[in-house]
Amino acid sequence: MPISLWRHFYDKESSASELAEAMIAFQKKYDWDFMKVNPRASYHIESWGAKIKFSQNPLIKTKVIEYPVKKTEDWKRLKVLNSADKASAEQLKALKLIKKRLKAEIFIVETIFTPLSIAGDLVKEEKDLLKDLRKEPELIHTALEIITETYSDFAVECLNAGADGIFYATTEWATKNILTEEEYLEFGKPYDLKLLQKIESAEFNILHICKSHNFLTLFTDYPVRVVNWDSIDPTNLNLKEGEKILNKIVLGGIDQENLLLKGTSDKVTKEIKEIIELNQKVNFILGPGCVIYPHTPEENLEAVRRAVENL
Image: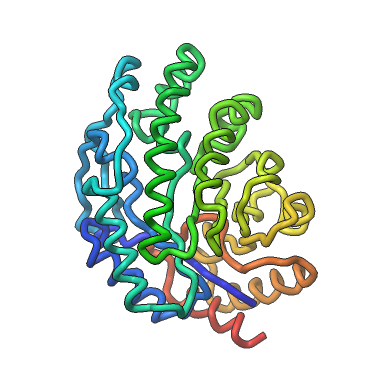
């Protein structure tokens, strides 16, 4: 049974070498079956003018202290970036370092947010993008085209740097908690597909659909091999239901918020076995519904690894 868990190392995300070392150490300790590289989330927006404060604490993430888009007119200031910009170049360096050390041992995927998600990070609050999206749609479409072009090129460079695919994350933007399905079909999906088509030949692209009340049924035609979502959340489809409609490998099944973070190692062992037995006929990879918390007890991670090995 293939398995992977992934987490942030917030105090190691300020340089390519530290990020690479943290990722490699985590992989060596637990021997996951693929590696999701977890850079700081703000790397997507730094070269458009975001100012950040790096964290020195492993439990506190990098903080954005100034956002590039402060008013509607600021969307017009966005320009297409290239992979030589500082933040992107740093991520490519980290990928090269990781690939050099791990060689062909496992699949490595780089995290890239969807264009709509990146647009959401360019403003201080979600409501700021929602307001402009609904009042100035053409302005937002132009911005999304710029973001898509920038990160389509970056995704290709990630593959050139050694990644075997992209972990393509919607963050909070593919859920009815924020948008209607019609809005995602207009402002999300066309740009998602445009980016993914540039890297369709990659061996191991993963689509991550975040949060509750997600729009899983909108993603059946996405050109990815694997789809990950919080299948434990009662507002979402479970792994069996998801695999049936997606006709792809599905990734998930582990409750990272309650089981891993708060459960005992014995409970983790018991539930991991139950998850695998429940999904015997499902083509799936065992993993969390989202990133695990950095303060997740190590004994629980060890219990997950042992439970899989002992089956």
